[in-house]
Image 1 (cartoon, rainbow, N blue to C red):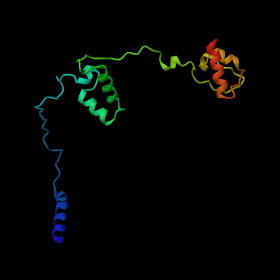
Image 2 (cartoon, helix red, strand yellow):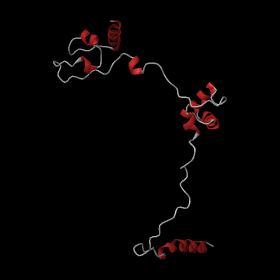
Image 3 (cartoon, rainbow, N blue to C red):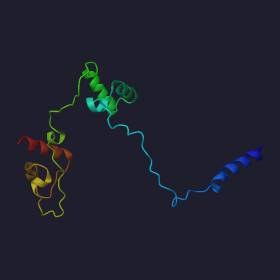
Image 4 (cartoon, one colour):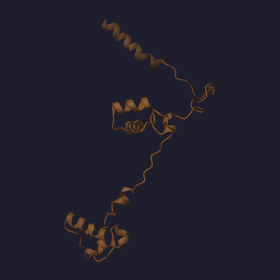
Length: 157
């Protein structure tokens, strides 16, 4: 039995060795004809693109599998707004509050000076001019508490 199995395996592996490869240089070139047009040319736009929310069933499944996924959270918002019950059209959220970098008045990072005698322009440092005036040239606050106090004082002025 082992001998027969070995012989069958060797015969199966030896078949590609004797195969003749096609001669690509002399063979005729026959173009392939596409009988079926490409799918998707005239298909209607998908639900997500039209309504800016996932389908009810797809969103619910996503919510059950991973509630913190983007699709699940979009479905949850649309479900609580009642978009699926009343067949509401496309809903695009608009936000009317300041961006985080506008609301937080901490500014950019301080510039690193190569020469302590050279003073950087206040507009390049990103911090307010009042903050730069409180400290002498080349000095910086010793702790985060002093820095926060200086920024609070600059915001009050």
